[in-house]
Image 1 (tube, rainbow, N blue to C red):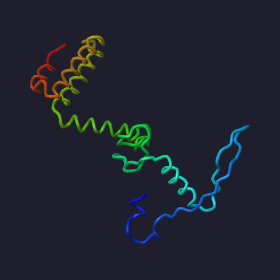
Image 2: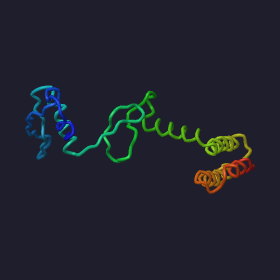
Image 3: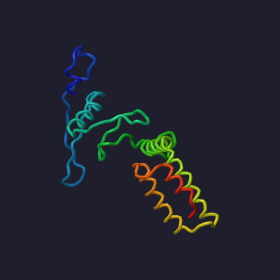
Length: 166
């Protein structure tokens, strides 16, 4: 707000705060709440802007849909919680999936790990392995994957380990 009102140029195009009128109304026995008395249509956005300032809310632009959202719990959030093109998925879910796919495409180790994980998981359905054996392999695979990503083992050694049958 300081940058907005402190800048040069005409103030005629800027939003001007006007006094707002409130009254108190009883909602239950002994419980009262503030009620905004709307005199003009701009009183509603005026009230919301004031509330955001009063609560010191911070906003960020969603990296997925490009719309602004309020940062509440997670101050490092990059995606909003709004539904995206698929009604059951939010920008946050789609953004995390996109980020994982981008990371996977950049890393041959992650790409190989994903391929082998899916193959080993399918073996349960075809009776080539048990769930217990698969989950033991998956834990070792995650440890080796992470070690490879940190540079503790070479990509060649990791790929060779993945090719070993359970």
